[in-house]
Image 1 (cartoon, helix red, strand yellow):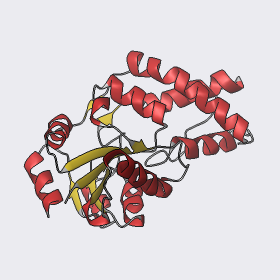
Image 2: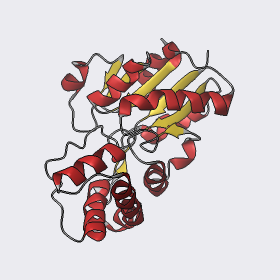
Image 3: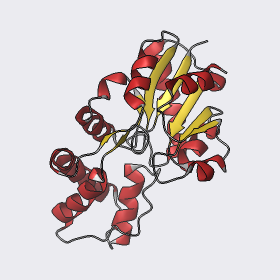
Image 4: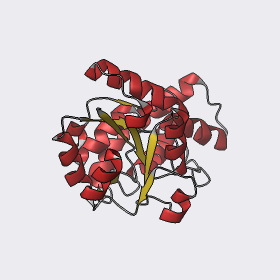
Length: 227
């Protein structure tokens, strides 16, 4: 049976050293003319479209569709320069070897399930030279709620590969409890990794299929998805 692997980005594939957050701050000032307070926003595992609503509300701006659209446009305008000129991040341990190993396996297809906007995901993963591993995905453009993204990813996987991936053979991979929850919503198996803000113990408390400290052990990852 074919396997479908759906990857989160920030804290799972890469660390961008806060490029997204800095871009959100710059975009707010650029669009609305004053420095916004983003310090109380819960970032981990959220979507860019959800965050936009929260940032605007926290700073006294009505989150209308137009204000959200303009803010996200500004965010996408400044994100590439933050990736280039800010503190340099990196691809996380073991990720490149794992992506390449999975790419060579005919029974495995890989996509994205991420809280990033599609263009934001492309900017980040192109910067870190891993965008070419992903032909499709589900993004913050599809819904502000991460739990809504699974069906979009499954539909695009079916359209791309002419194959219906069963929940038992679909794996959602991420570094937060939100990633685990959104996988369970569609009945998928879940793999958590403690390369973000959460420890192995914190992630294990949400009962993923498996939890890793990092992805340095490619063989163990392959054993998990073969079960």
